[in-house]
Image (tube, rainbow, N blue to C red; front, side):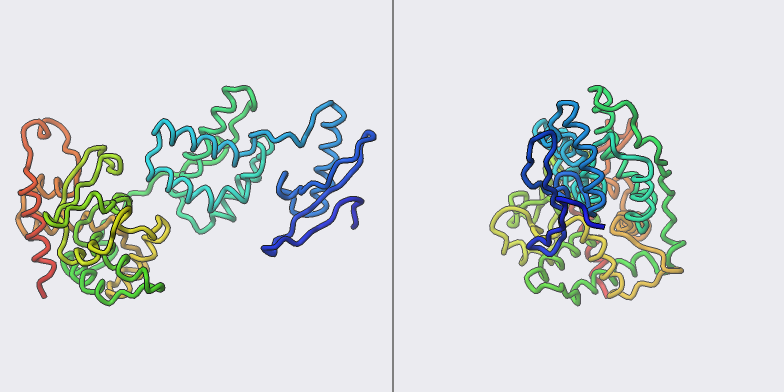
Length: 365
């Protein structure tokens, strides 16, 4: 069906946008891109939106005034404020942006909050995020709910529809021994050896990815923190990283030794991030490729994650190498709880020695 004044145009990138030109109450309005302005994907949607616009005009309102009331606008504003007052760390921004841009911006982000309905949220959960683990879907509520709450306080909306979507309980992680019958030390040794055979799809990323995986396997530190390390945090002559509190989960600086294996790569970095091209969404893909290359078998396709290396390090240090359990915990930069944090502490030399023993054990055939 043809609609007067409404037509579809193909843009330079191949996408199709709906344009509308109309006259109402003796005023002719210039051609407007209804896809960009209101998210219309068909000429019928544009026609229906035009009727709403005419109603607003008849009430003396200008529907084309740029107001920041879409979810995208409000999210971007909230991010800018939290970056300015440093309420969000760079790691939080990266995590939120990755999730928001992938699942929200182009699906419901163009809508005004008052126009987002339960069916929109259900479709987002059941279709757009169908492949996402239930616990990961909770990220949606963490990001979007505060925006609705703030707009309710301002009186712009009256209901927080995000509350209509369920919050999933975080699953208890299955013990590693129930996911694989490989011995702990064998897993780490296999991963270590497989790194040398790892090939990146892009040649310029080969050494970056191999060095990142080496650091993950050998230190078992949180990959989110490793990805934020800068060469300025690295003291190659002393073989020490000093992770600044701005990137650590404990909000404290901490030191840990640099494996010899990545020093040649570090010497190629002049400034800025040590792993400049590595993004949050790539880490699991890299690690799963490494597991396959290492030929580590699991039961019924169950998964091993980079975070499991923290458990492996603790178990091997304590059980195999007889390293004090609190010292092993300190190597991972865990915050000690209770009275022990007031009476027991270890020096960097203690941590370094524990790591050296662990690395020697890994390197042995």
